[in-house]
Length: 88
Image (cartoon, rainbow, N blue to C red; front, side, top):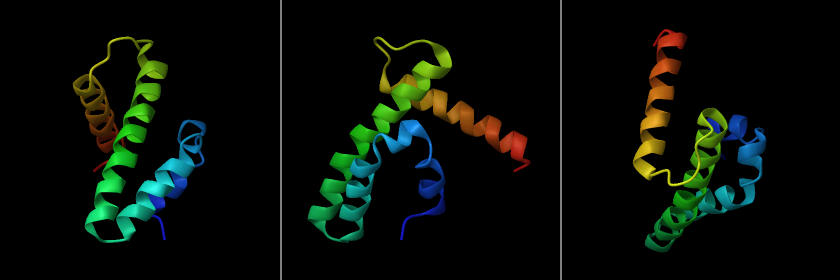
């Protein structure tokens, strides 16, 4: 029932460490009600931010005092590179 991207990335160690919490967030979303949506955001946002911080640190060596905006900029740049390399 999970999207293909989740199944692929869940094999990565950084993601698999958080797998049960991410699955809980996705399950909450699939409840398709107000409580589920709130629980989904609460679960997923902190886990996604933690994953982004680990990736950012492993790729840049920077870790202390990193702002969410830095993490977002970094992942956007990675997406642009991916799109160029994949020919999209």
